[in-house]
Amino acid sequence: MNGVLKAGVRSKTKRRSRGPEAQLKSAVVDCLRMIPGVHVLRMNAGVMHVGGENDKRRIHLGEVGTPDLLVMLPCGRSLWLELKAPSGTLSPAQAAWHERARKLGHTVHVVRDTRDAIDLVTRSKAGMG
Image 1 (cartoon, rainbow, N blue to C red):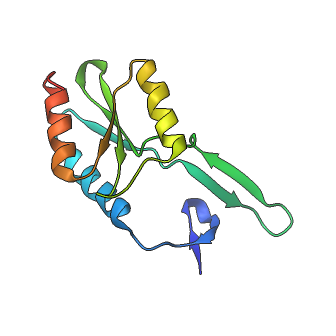
Image 2: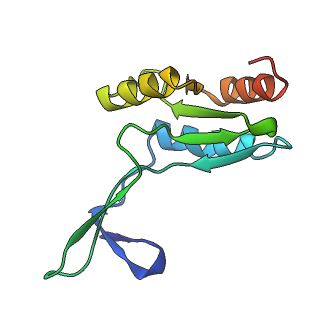
Image 3: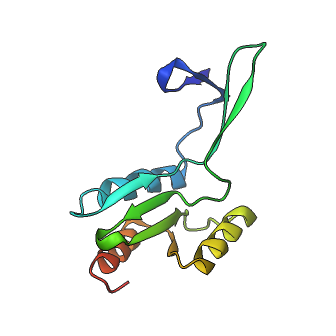
């Protein structure tokens, strides 16, 4: 069964079960959105296939390797968070993205549980992270 996207566009991929990283992402987003003065954006990078049989197109959603979340903090600060299951590893594209962002002065973290995400954002918001 094809998944239905907003605006009535159907995806060509079957809906996947919610694995550990998807569950972690939902939990982290829910927790971080409760912290006052913090804005959380899900980046959702990937490819979406749209169109009918005769006009198939691919729409790229973000850049390959982009972290899962962008967390905006007060005073123009921000954090990029890559969410990984306890045994999950970065793909080569993710590692390259993280390295490039860090060289440009951005803060990128790999987070493996909600407590780490909350502590990291709370400390960064207070100017300690």
